[in-house]
Image (cartoon, rainbow, N blue to C red; front, side, top):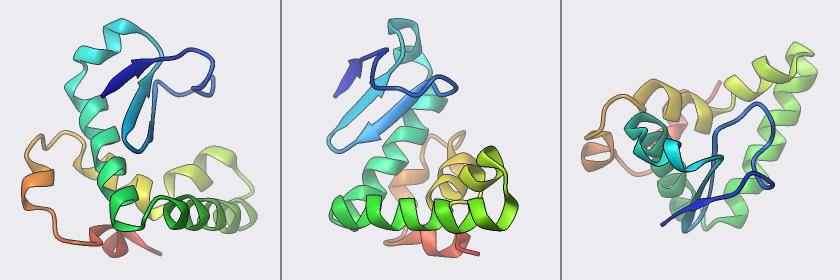
Length: 108
């Protein structure tokens, strides 16, 4: 389900997934298949890690990379969940063939 919320989405981002919802900044973005696929990848990750563990891991990994790089954007882009989503967002069939816990391949 896709919901529109300008309040929930941080300024520099267009969408956010919180299982079972995808929040987007505006109605036009609902037709952006790449953005929606990116967020659907996050929904799958959240399902695999039972939601709370996903967000715990996400925050810990972000903080680790923030200390490592001292750069917000670089830290965000190096989170394994984000790496998987960004590298596969254009493959609209990715989720059909994706293996369980595939985000681990992107962990570094």
